[in-house]
Length: 389
Image (cartoon, rainbow, N blue to C red; front, side, top):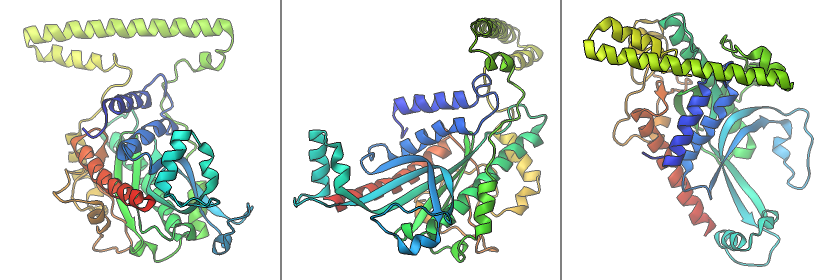
């Protein structure tokens, strides 16, 4: 595994909180930001001296972009832009206001030794690169009435994330602040699912700068992040839980619920044992069905194979170009790289940015793509360290 054991545990816990019906009853998008930060942390592990993660990173375009003044704070009411859910940043700097001839790397080492945090006042940021932009949406509904609703809840959220992160990338590569940047990795995520694309400056999608209407639609299209799952069974108590009496009632209710879950778990285990001993399919089915109500948040309601089959029969199969005709992305080919992903094109629509198919966090496919992105960030880190020396 690429990630350390501690990061692995943190990812598992963040997924558990994200899918928790008690601590995320509204299926909020924002709770998934912790997973985003951990995911990016895996990509830069060992390179924290070069990259840093920035939630809610602002990108914008402005008429004043052609006349940037490094010495003044400039209010700009005509600036139009958005906040990206999570971004990976690489800041390149030079050392100023000092007579020493030591390199940036030596200056960092000495500052660390002396605990000299004021070193930042001796640095000028000469360029800021954004290797990764991530737009996050809510995970799929946890109570779908059927396979179609489950499928559509994945597709719709990922579709909204793709559209937004693509416009964000177009704004980024249209800004004079990022003229030195040639490409950006796009992550469209929804719960534990995500898709990847790589946009290069040479792509036909950038033949036109995003219009003010495109940017306004992106700003106004931000979801309110209020879920629709009807799972907030303790809502009235939570609202008044600052009062001592209601707080105790809430704690007692939670304790009763926990005891109930433990009793159901015990019953499910007993039925499962009976099913194994007697080999009765009906008892096995009942045990499986009951265990779904034991867990705080269980596995996806439909297996990947069933989702894949539904995709083959849906109209989406022919509607959107993908390099593989599958809902879930297969493992990458040997030699796959960020550059090869950047070369993907829709043969019928030159301006269409091609995303991978769907990838699930923690799968073997995800591990392979994490390795591809990590190889790219490692190369960038090595180049930056050479520059500092």
